Length: 565
Image: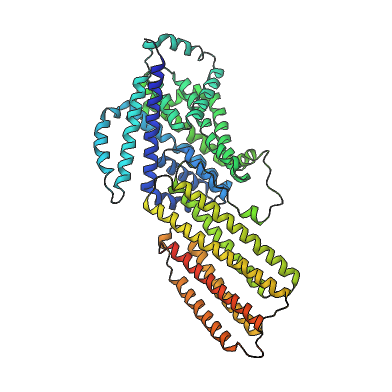
């Protein structure tokens, strides 16, 4: 039987169907479990074993180690995770990705679930039309599940058996007779395949299919799987190109972890597979993972899990050395200013996960709030400083913070715009809308402080002075605003906006308004008095009116957090 271009197109189509099914499953489960996954990621600690379990759980759920590691690199880049904290998550992700292999080998070859795809569609399709709750997303998950195994079934039919292409099989055997060199060659093959399809799960499915059709001996298939572990790290490496030094180290760490593991496994592979065969025969009761094609798929899935688990348990104890190796040749930024330290670099290829991207967005918005509150502290120092040199330094710093504020608003808005092009849950959409409103108010606060700094600069140049009671009232108003900022920042730091209460912020806003009204009434009553300088009075009126507007924007932020805007 000849193998032509039409057969290649069939294989390609089957792989595409498999990829689409996996994508549909992954995105659906993110929408269903988005808030729970966000809570897990928001509470990551420095404990490497808890990080390991987190990486395993998330990857097992979303079925993509590449997506998990890119997300981790993105968080390290944003300063939400340290490199040390990322180690456990990355290693856990490597183990979590082996779940796909078990699904494919058990349900794709042992049970042949593709024979029941029509029944699966019969359950999933009606759920797509239920708009209430999460039924629609569960329907998408079931549809993706069905498409995944339908694609696998087509792939199995498209890949010919040995007897149908004996010449091709004999050609392939020429590459399997050279011991460790053959293993290294097929490690390279596995790496290339995974780089091309950008998914170790897809590459694993292809490898398992080749095994089920009798094309690959177990040692060759295992070598290809080892290469797939290396190939899957390229996604995070590409994502880290525009990232900072720490994020680059985190991405490299993933690569070095897999390269070192593959190195020692290639050396002991024949003995390891023999031991694994004995263990699987005892645990699962399979006949022969070396000769029986279907049993071989079970053996390969077990090998994938055992290798990644053992490698993780060994190397997680050497994480400080791995971090040093990963950092070789990387140079940190020097002579950085305020704008360099505080600007954001969102990693765009985060795997199409708007549900998870909300974590970084909320953290960046929290940082935005802290930056704006620092402008308030600097303005208070400006009001109470008479030294001209110190005043100029403070005014310069306020200007820099205002420029950072503009950059942050643009970056966050543009990133949200990109994320909203895809489908997401109503809750995630609400979070994005709230963040946009928050950023709008924070940027206005920054503008007001910048304008106030210019007003104070001109006041000082014209030798205009506040009366002691005016300065005292401004300080009192500044104190209330500072307290309001602290409440606002606390609200912004909440992992779940739905748990935030705006009552404390509202009480502060009422006090700010009451004090401003008192200041205005006293100011108007004293206008025309001989001891009340008109120029000073006009600046004073401008200052307390502007500070009251800042109070309005602060309460707007808390209202946006709670979803009231």
